[in-house]
Image (cartoon, rainbow, N blue to C red; front, top):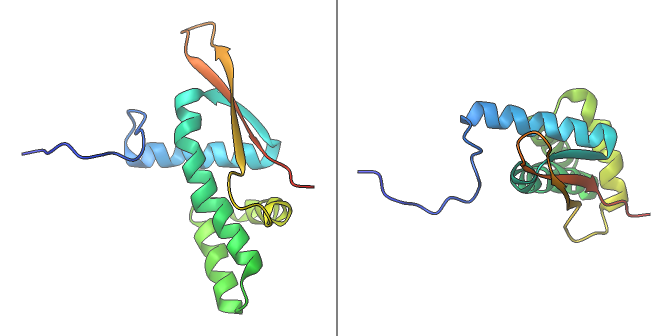
Length: 128
C-alpha cells in the first residue's frame, strides 16, 4: 500500500535522472550568465538544489582548514557540475562567503505568452 508522505520538493513530473539533468543544466546556465529566466515552479525546485548542494559546498571548501576536507567538498560539487564549472563557482562563493544563506533571488516575471505559465528570473546575489 502506498502511503502518503510529505514530499520536500516538486518532482516537476519528471523521472529522477531527467530532473537531475534539468537542475544541472539550470546550474550551468546560472553560473555562466548570472541570471536565467525559467518557469516559477522550476525556480522554486532549483533554489534548494543550487544553494544547498553547490553553493554551500563551495563556501565550505573555501573555509576548510584541512586539505582533504577542501578536496572532499570540491568533489561533492563535481557530482552536480562539470569540471570546467568548478572555478567559476568558487569565484562566486568567494564573494558570498560572509553571507549566512540565501544566495539566490527569485523574481516573478509574469506569464508566458504561449501557455500562460508563470515565469521567473533567478539571479545570484553579488556581495561586493
